View 1 (cartoon, rainbow, N blue to C red):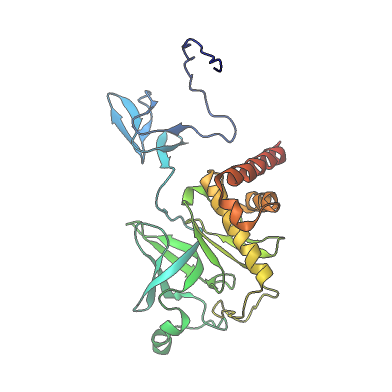
View 2 (view 1 turned 135 degrees about the vertical axis):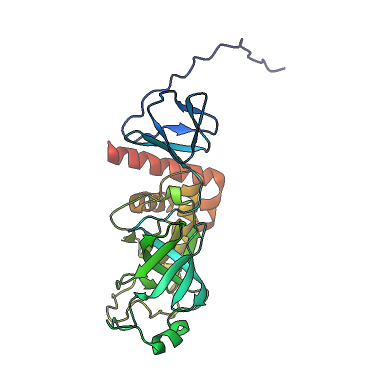
Length: 294
């Protein structure tokens, strides 16, 4: 009979909350006391009870001067001006398109807020309004930039740049918006042979890197030629790597995705989604990112 080792219970040391260092964030759960200082103002995700500021959602505490709010870890997308988003056309209306962008309300793309095919600059006519469904129709995916946010939280988009517009062949991955890191650019051509658009709204588009940029298209020509098997394998591997990073709650940006892709190369594409393989490659990715920061 095998010997069984036992030990007496030991009182655990109380965890003393300390001020967050460098990149760490102060995480709270619903009902946690954020502060007992009455000098702070109550922001989103908080409420006051018995002169204590308490969190009403699980998330990271953010302070702006005396305003304290809690940014939820899992939430719908809240648009900010200048964000890059990937969305799907849900409805064609008069002089506008409705776009699904993972927010509480449908976003709006006005006919006047887009480039005309060929990059023409002129006033929109009745003919343009009649041809709206030729430009974009229900089900089409687009990349766009947030132009403004309405008072009710709905977002107005624009595609007045040749880098935005209709998306062609590729794979869409939906993740939590809180896992997409804000960067100067969200369009990345990765050295592995594919490109990604990391939408701030949690929609990530993976597609074959185009051999040449078509500057005359105005963002509306879609290449429907067959995608080579090698490109499809790269895209599939990238998609599984992003799913692995999201499962292990690691932030998504170009370096983390590339490191995860390189760590996954010894494994078959379908094996990346196995829990033990997922944990192994994300652990290696996390270690490389820490070495990079150090």
